[in-house]
Every structure is written in structure tokens, then in C-alpha cells.
Image (cartoon, rainbow, N blue to C red; front, side, top):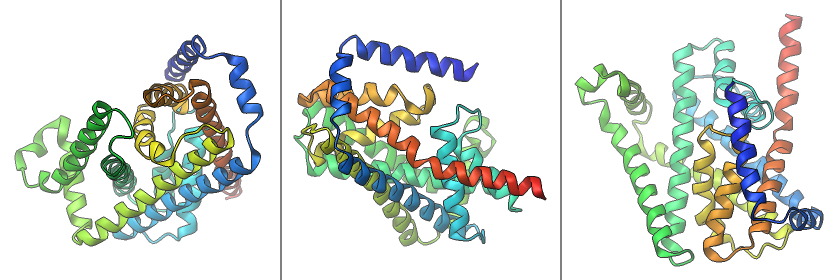
Length: 304
């Protein structure tokens, strides 16, 4: 039922977009895309996924998890495959938790490990967006830029406040925010060194920077005339919106958000939509290694 609703939302958004964008113009843009730039974008996206897995590996070492880097790379690609390709009720983060529990780790520890990795990844996205919006202020209309800066600051300050959340004892008994209280305690236990925290956030910034570079390569492939600084400011909010699980793998939400944001700077809606579709297809292709690791794991499990 959930996936049916997501499919309907995805179809509805694309239907709305095609009411304003000529399908044949879009197809012509896609057909003329330059393969060399797309190949480079594909390599950059793979690099982004690998770097995200490396961040997870470094975070897991704080929890005394002793798996090799290859374990985290394989699991992260499997998670990406489930997120991007399979219309499954099991999300990519759940796949990673399952992999850790199968490796013999406690279910709660595995959950917090993946959860902390997700939070650090989100903070890295906010930091990148804040820096880009401040440095390149004026690229977009001031109202939009101020909104992005405000949201980024609130998110970063919210994360910083997590480190004192655990000291407020009565919050532990409030069901709605009990999870945040426990997360706060875990963060303080594992990030006794704030230098190490900054290193992990820096890795997250690099992860998202590679993703923006991948999208820039796609923009160049269709001659979209969008500067790199525009993408640095506009894409993080798009990525944040696609986290909301109301469409299939972010399809529709990503396209609608990109068209809406880039029209603020006079970009061609057809080219922006083409860019988003190409990126979505690129995500699917870059997730294919995850299918190999997943099938191989299933085969090995059956043999046992």
C-alpha cells in the first residue's frame, strides 16, 4: 500500500511537470547529452558512495565494530541498491543494520551506528549548503538565500544541542523525544574528541561535494548553462527534500524541487528536468554493484 501511494505521488508530480514542459523538447535534450561528461559524473557518484561508506567505517570504529572497510563498502552499496532500485519496504539503512546484526553485533548498537552515520551525513550537507550560500550570496534571490542560510543554521545548531540533550534527565521519560535523549548520550560517549567529530563532518562535506560535482557533469553534458556555485546552493535543499519518503526513491520530488528552484535564476525548465532525470538514472546505474553484493550474500547464506 505504501509503495502504491508513493507511485501515485511520483506520477502526479511528473504529470504536473509535463503540463508545463514539452515532452519532445525534453527528449531532444536527453538524446543530445554528451556521454563523456555523463561517464565522468558516474565516476564521481561512485566516488561519493565509496567515501560515504568510508565515513561509516570510521564512525563504526568508535563503537568498537571490527569489520573491514570492504564490509562497509559492500553494505553501503547494497543499501543504495535497495533505496534506488527496489520498491521494497526495507530501506537502505535497514539493510545496513541487518548486515551488522548478521555479523554478530547487538541490534541496538547496530541501529545507533547507522543512525549516527546518517546524522553526520546530514550535518555535512547542511554545512556545505551554509558555506556555499554565504560565500556566493547573491547568486539566488535574497529571500531564497536567507531561507537556506536560516534552515542550515537551525539544523547545525540543532545538532550541536544534541550534545547537551542527555544532561536533561526528565527528557529521558518523554516518549516522543526519548530517542533523541539516547542518541545524545551515544554521541557524547563516542565523540569525546570534537576534532574527530569535525573530521567525520568534513568527510560528509566531501561526500556531498562529489555528488554536486556529478550533477555539474550532467549539467555540462546537456549544456544547461548552470554554474557550479548555483548547484552548490540549490542541490542540498533538493537532497534534503528527497529524504522525505513520499515518492519512489525521491523521483518526482527531486525533479519538482529542481525545476522550482532553478527557475528562480531563469534556467530552462526542460534542461533542468532533463538533468534531474539523468541524475536519477545515474543513481540507479551506480547502485548496480549493490545488487551483485546482495545476490552474492544471499547465495553464500543459502550454501551455509
